[in-house]
Amino acid sequence: MSDFFDFELTLRLLSLDFVISALLVAAVLGLLAGVLGPLIVSRNMAFSVHGTSELALTGGAAALLLGWDVGNGALAGAIVAALILGLLTRRSTEYDSVIGVILAFGLGLGVLMLWLYKGRAANKFGLLTGQIVGQDFASMALLTGAAVVVLAVLAVVYRPLLFASVDPHVAQARGVPNTLLAVVFAVLVGVATALGVRTVGSLLVLALMVTPAAAAARVTASPLRATGLAILFAELSAVGGIILSLAPGAPVSAFVTAISFLIYIICWIVGRARRTALA
Amino acid sequence: MSATPAVTLSGARLAYGDRVLWDGLDLDVAPGEFVAVLGPNGSGKTSLMRVLLGLRALSSGTVTVAGQAPGRANRRIGYIPQQRAIDPGLALRGRDLVGLGWDGHRWGLGLRGVRERRRRVDTALAEVGAEGYAERPVGLLSGGEQQRLRVAQALVGDPAVLLCDEPLLSLDLAHQRAVSELIDTRRRTAGTAVLFVTHEINPILPLVDRVLYLVDGRFRIGAPEQVMTSETLSDLYRTQVEVVRVRGQIHVVGAHGEVCEDFHMHEHLAER
Image 1 (tube, rainbow over the protein chains, first blue to last red):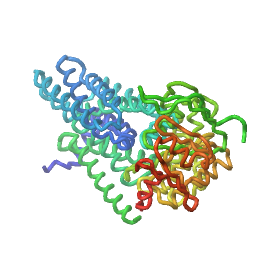
Image 2: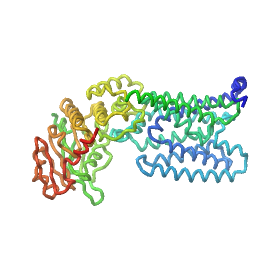
Image 3: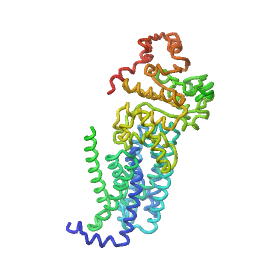
């Protein structure tokens, strides 16, 4: 434990190329998660994001087994999941249980495929907890390209999407295509989730996609400010998590989740104190 | 009042399979006119709203809203829904709710229109007297405050037609009066046509020009004093119904509880 917070070692590692590219990946992911997060929280989609990330794992496992690129497999799995979950209406009382049903089956399938896979064990573990170090140029390009596309689409649909997310009845009355937007948003979330699965792992995507936005919603009611804070919190968690994980060489996800959880707790306390002061 | 109707329905029929909600419905609503849509649950009041919003097609007949086919004119419609519980943790302030009524339906981020949006929202908030809580999360506001914001949200886009779907439900009497007066002022000053779906006519009785009363596939259109009579309602309900006027209020006393117009009264009194 003596080298757990070794500053010199951390600084030395920070000058390495693969660490810098890992930090870039984390920064891009943090931006995506921070922008999408407040909408995910407003739409009560945390469980659906979890389901999507588990099915990204299934896609990744299938790709591993078939010898395809794991990143593409995860992307395909997440998009299929997002389309299925996006087409389910949010009002349906079955919504939660259908996610649970699909999630459990998909995860079971993933476990089976990982068992059938006879390659390196590290590849299997990487799908669960992420492998942010060791991103090659191709995956960097995929990540950046996908992130640009997600942000561009989001910029086009942002206002009606916000309307449909926070006030669906009036949005529909004003001619906003709620169902179409639900599917588009689910796909955007699916793409971002698949990118997250490769880096922080499928089990911990929620730590970036949901926790920062949930924390932001505790301290501000302005959608704009909530998005700004969610980006800040997601960046702190993702980039900070990597830097802290360098010296001890521990899994990144442990630090990412710890930081985002700490931020959430602080925001929860601040929000509670403010609300008590108002009342 | 201009000659072009804000809403026209002619020979309109709506049926789900064998069940006919209404048939042969002819209704022209003039600009600035206040039409109350009454009737028991399941009589097709909300379905009429859905038809006007283009969310449901007529089985037969024609309909236009603001001179256009339904679904094309939604930007010219202001819609006030019934008050629903809003999650207290929702990241949305009163001002944001109103702002969505201004440009929430438009594509893009809307960065260029920020100043205009702010001005419009401020004006709309002032019109309903909601400046005091415009910065607070909507989920923490009372039902009456939320409905005032709903009026601002519906009016900020300068609509030609205002569709109100039970907007007074679950409000106390003071807020019922405040919200309905805001709607009345608007239609008098800007000539906005109002279609007002309600279970209970009394809170809006002084404002209503005409009543559309729907029961079980039958309907009657006319001034309140023509439609709200024992004879007409008995005919519509196909059972003996007594209409009693007490101190300017209308009470419908029927053989069945469901006929009773004021059965929501105890809920209003219980609220807050």
